[in-house]
Structures are given as C-alpha cells and as structure tokens.
Length: 152
Image (tube, rainbow, N blue to C red; front, side, top):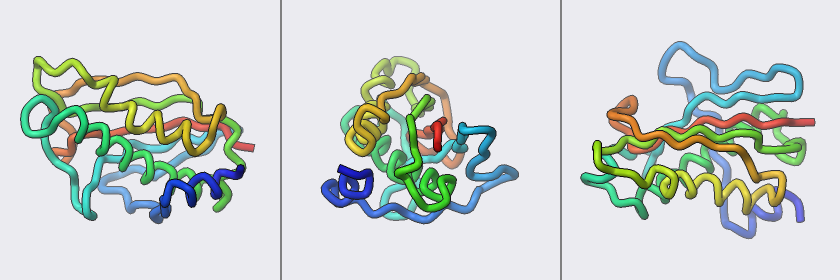
C-alpha cells in the first residue's frame, strides 16, 4: 500500500506548507536528509494553546501532536517535490510539550505524532525520538514538533 493509499484510508488531506512566523524556512535539505522546522499545534486553523497538566489533558495533547504530524507531512511532501513516496525513513522526531512542572507524560503526548507516522509509512515511519516538557512554546501552543527524514 502506498503512502497516499494509507493517507486516504486514514481520511487525511495534507495541508499546504505553512508560512513561517519568523526568520526561518520550513525545511532544509542537505544530502538525502530533510530537516523540518518546528510546527506548532493548531485546531480549527488557530493556535492550539494551553498547558499540559493544567488546561489540557494527556489525551487532548496526543490529539494535538497528531494534528502537528499532519502539518509536518504537508511540509515533508513539499520538501519531497510533491511525492511522499520518496521518503526512505523518518529518522528523528523532537517534541516540545508546554507543560506544568509536575506533568510527566510528554512521551504519551508525543505518541500522537509517532503513531501516525508509523501508520502512514509503516516500518519506514519508526524513528528515534525526544520528548521534552517546556515552560512555554511560541504563541502559547501546547505542542511543537520538528522532524528529520531521509529521502531518495
């Protein structure tokens, strides 16, 4: 099954590349590696703001991370010249979770992204990962995730 068949089965339409909010580019390719800039969680087209352990539950955070993964896939598609079938491997995911001092489930929140990548890419979607709790993310977003992929 192709990446696009899996996306269709999951009822996922990829968004266009978001316009950067500051002085950076959405992605950079060096050799066969593509580095995607951090993408913040959005809900209904707006920043998905809030703090895990306060206003947002782990389950909601996981949904936010999944939403970020969909945005990342839109950017990755652009980085692949429009063809996600060029992805050889998702190499690394780094997740920042806007958390209270006592919140310790950043890894479970980040699973929302990791699980979707595995659903879309199969074994190629298995990746190394870091999940950090942070005091704040730009615009108050609850989750920000960046990604590194290897492409053909």
